[in-house]
Length: 43
Image 1 (spheres, helix red, strand yellow):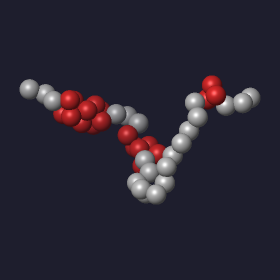
Image 2 (tube, one colour; image 1 turned 30 degrees about the vertical axis):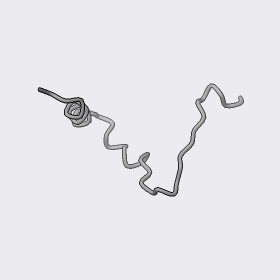
Image 3 (spheres, one colour; image 1 turned 90 degrees about the vertical axis):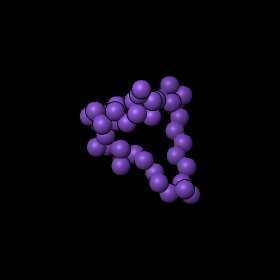
C-alpha cells in the first residue's frame, strides 16, 4: 500500500525543478518569507 508520504517522495524524485529548491527554501528559523500575490501588487 502506498501512503501519502510515499507518493509525495515519489513525485519529488521525478520533479524536474527540484534543483532550484535550495534557492528558495529558507532554513533559518528567524527568517519569515512573506509574499503578496502578483494581482495585489500595484502597477
